[in-house]
Every structure is written in C-alpha cells, then in structure tokens.
Length: 202
Image (cartoon, rainbow, N blue to C red):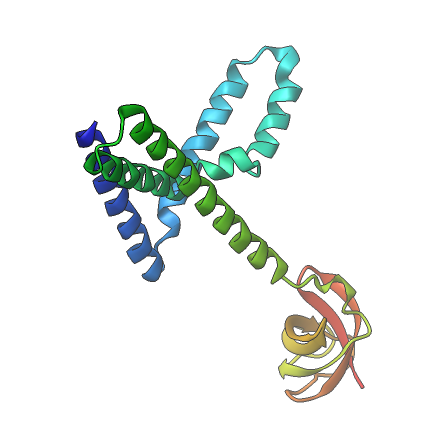
C-alpha cells in the first residue's frame, strides 16, 4: 500500500503542479476542457442506448449533467487534488505505522475532502464570474458618453460608455440621427441587441 500511496501523491502532485503552472500561463482550461468533452461523449452514448420511451429522461439528464454538483466534482482538477491528498495522507499513516484500516480511512477521507474543497472553490469562482457579468437589458434611459464615433443614420456601429448598476459599461451603439463624435453626451433610447443600444445625443 505504501507504493500505491506514493504513486498517488507523486502523480497527483505532479499533475496539480502542471495545472497551476499552465493556469499561470493562461493554458489551464485545456485540462478540464478535455475531460468535459469525454464526459459529454459518455452521456451521449448512454442516451443513445436508452429505450425510445426513455428519450425524454435521457435528454433531461444530459441537459442538467454539465451543471450538476456530481459532474462538477469530477473535473480533472478536483480528481487530481483528491489523489494528491489521499496519497499524502496514506504516506503519513504508513510512516507513523497506523493500522491498515486507519491509514486507508485517513487516505479516503483526505481524498474526499480534497475533492469537495476544490469543487467548492471552483464553484465559488464560477459564481463570481457569473455575478461579474452585467445584464444590460435595463440600460434604456441611462446616460453616458460616446467612446468610439457612432455613424449617423444607422450606417454602422460605434461604442458608448454608460454608468449602470454602479459600474462603467461599454456597449456597441447605433443612432437614427446625425453622427455622434467621441465625447458626445448621450442617452440610451432602447436596447436593440445583447450588447447593442440605440442612442441619441442629449
């Protein structure tokens, strides 16, 4: 068992270090991206084997699987942390000459704790990213200034900066009137797209 624990700690620790380095280099998404693709392929295969009468259930499970806590916990990053902590706990127990079942229990507990901890941290980071996305549906009536020249008569797109929800929001903009040079004070008349507004000079 000592060899198993050492292998878990070595492989898990190496992968964890690689993930940290690649994250610092801006390449950290590749690890989880590859695993998520494999998970989606497995879900599609299972749905394909289901009986026709169960198609709705299969679609339901597939639609929610990517967002479920169980699938989220099975990211490569979380599994790597679990292997690392389990291996380290097993090595400590072996060095201290704990009983076999105590060492195994400690390794299992440490692995589960590592998996849940990393999954929770990643979930919180995901929430922070989601909360940081401003919903611009309510910007109609807001004031701002032209950031990039807005062509007149809807001849093209410019950009405007608005003060909305306590922060500065940048949106693409069109106008029905004459051209709006940079720095022109404007008001948003309506939202015409996910990140596009129709504006007018004040």
